Amino acid sequence: MIAITNWLNERNSLNVKHFNDNPWLFVSRTGKPLSRQRFYNIVSAAGKNAGLNIKVHPHMLRHACGYSLADNGVDTRLIQDYLGHRNIRHTVIYTASNSMRFEKMWGRGDAKKQHFDPKCKPNLCLEILV
Image 1 (cartoon, rainbow, N blue to C red):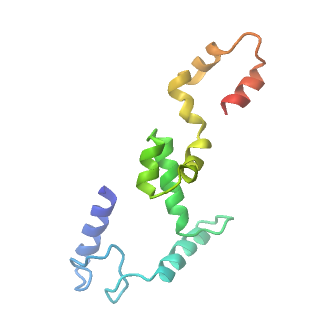
Image 2 (spheres, rainbow, N blue to C red; image 1 turned 135 degrees about the vertical axis):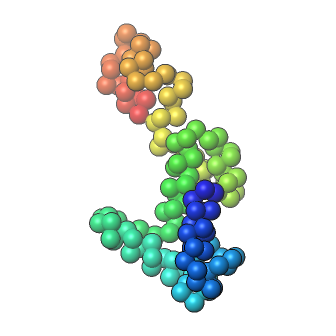
Image 3 (tube, rainbow, N blue to C red; image 1 turned 180 degrees about the horizontal axis):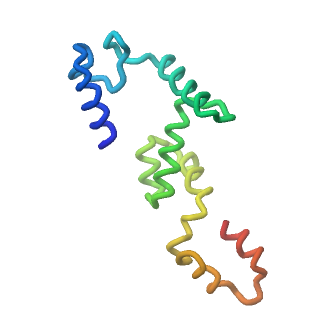
């Protein structure tokens, strides 16, 4: 919310008549809401300008949000509700690839090594954790 508030304050400080108190978050130069296609073009161009070797699209922002929530330890059911997923399987994608979810269980850093079974080969244990 802080970023949105900052953006609205910045936009309103431009003193452009159709920007001030406009209910839309992103507006065109004419004060109308950005079209879906225009937003797509802006995000795609930003990816190209950043030199990314993948095709960037707006839905990636949604994925980034899901991964960020999972990385910060937010419960999977809350992420599901926040993203509006009907099926938990769609949400589990964000948490399944997050090896850091075991951090609280195993401790931090080198403390993980203290919990290995002496018979366990270190590389095998690391593969299981990652």
